[in-house]
Amino acid sequence: MTIQLTPEDEKLVQKRLQSGVFRSVEEVIHDALASQNAETEWLTENKEAINEKIARGIAQLDSGEGVSGEVARARLQQRKADWLRDKGA
Image 1 (cartoon, rainbow, N blue to C red):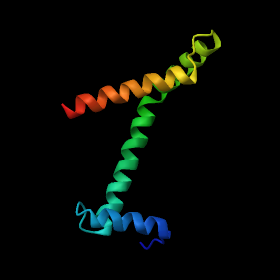
Image 2 (cartoon, rainbow, N blue to C red):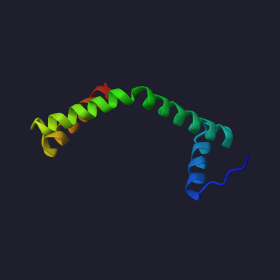
Image 3 (spheres, rainbow, N blue to C red):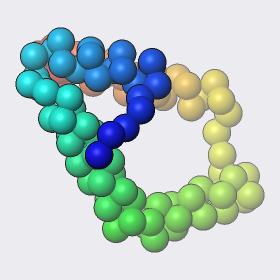
Image 4 (cartoon, rainbow, N blue to C red):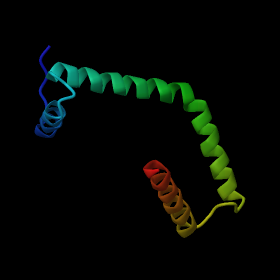
C-alpha cells in the first residue's frame, strides 16, 4: 500500500521519529491508527452516558442552574492550580 501524506502530516511523522520513540514510519502510523481505534471504541462504548450527561446539562441550563463564564473559568483555573500543585508534590 502506498499513501500520500500532506506536508503537515510528514512533519508530524518526522517529529515522532526524531523523538526516538518510534523506529520507523510504519510504527508511527500503527500507533496513530491504534490510538484512533481505541478512541473510537471508547466513544462507542460511552456514547449513551455522554448523551445523558449532555441532556442533563441542557436541562440544568434550561432550569436556570447554569453558571456564568467567569465562574466556570475561575473554577477551572482553580482546578488547574490544584492539579499542578499536587503534581509537583
